[in-house]
Image 1 (cartoon, rainbow, N blue to C red):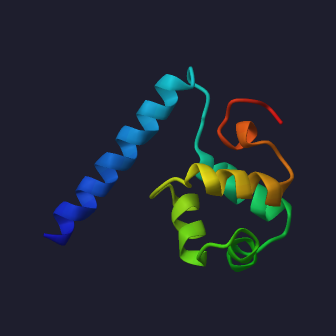
Image 2 (cartoon, rainbow, N blue to C red; image 1 turned 60 degrees about the vertical axis):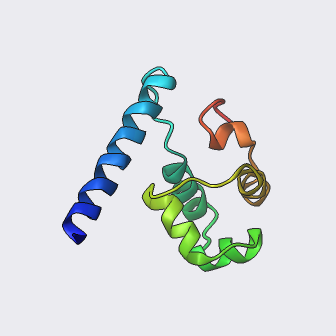
Amino acid sequence: MSILIMSMRKLIFLYNELYNMIISGGRNMNIGKKIYELRREKRLSQAQLSFKIGCSQSMIARWEKGECEPTATNIVKLAAAFDCSADYLLGISDY
């Protein structure tokens, strides 16, 4: 049964990647990758970032792995922590 669950998770992940690619016009719109890159650029650990925005370290890890996406509220908090726009995190703008 665990193999089936893992296969379903992978299928959902691939579906989400394809969906994001289609709606973004082929641009990579993976918010998890942006969170990871910005966190590393700011030299923050997952624990430090989670403390700044008020969520768990495991939630940051799940976002970065693409297992789930942050809520709108958390996107606003992330944008403030990274000093960027929510649009940038969502792949809508370049800054």
